[in-house]
Length: 333
Ligand code: EPU
Image (cartoon, rainbow, N blue to C red; front, side, top):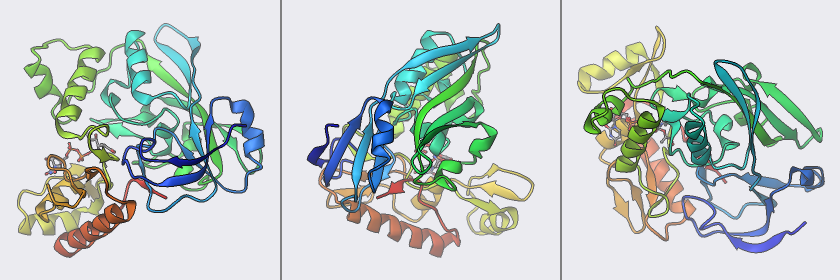
């Protein structure tokens, strides 16, 4: 196996933090998994778009570069597609559109790989990847064997799954099977999608049009990691009890909310952070994006420690102002 040494993570993770890893391996063939199971400690990188590195990671860093998309079966209404975990997520979205398959058009332009998608149940504009996942196949580092988990067994939640909990550090996702629809089932009610379709003069949209609208919206407010380092939403949107929300509404009349169930609402963390005055904050090379307060940014030479400190200050100020404890969404190394 070709293990490389002293590799910088600057261009390998989207935050663009310049940390040197001692041992680095690019995995292209899953036949190497049994041998890699013998390594004492390892960390896996997919697209590197949801990781903040604050210190040199211990052990072997494995970058997932596996590729392959294949049709497993199809019927009149659906197709079951198996995708290697190292495929770039957005490329896969474009592939499904080229095959006239529906279901993930709202998830266009989400950075990262197919293998990372189930781990945090990626979601945007009213769709979560759990809605189309049939099953996930992973290599178990401890038992040294392949395991297939059904959708239910993955225990998906909001930006959550079994991979962040019981299976933490135990798995390498090899491939994901998606059940996609041949029938158009557009989800355009969320956010600015309809507004953007109107701007584009599209009266009867198809999945490609919705993907284009999502691409336009995302590009207009989320920083491109190739230009400004970031890892998308840094925090999760918190769920709070309805009573707490009603009490807050007396003090902050414009606080937005989305219903979750009869006891709970979700409030946008970006709004809370903006109200605390952080939007557009910048010190040296680290800060809060000027168009989306949920996104922390590296303007060039920020350290992981600086971004971590900033996130801690934001946590304290949101807690002091609203009594809400935010939770980080990014993985911290
Ligand atoms: N808002 C503000 N100020 C801000 C940012 C947002 O007031 O600086 C308000 C907006 O006005 C809006 C609300 O917050 O009322 C929601 O904002 P937006 O639609 O931009 O979405 P979000 O809740 O901030 C979530 C996901 C994104 C996903 C978008 C669109 C999380 C943690 N983030 O962001 O996912 O793209 O919805 O569906 O759930 C990611 O996970 O990395 C990610 C980018």
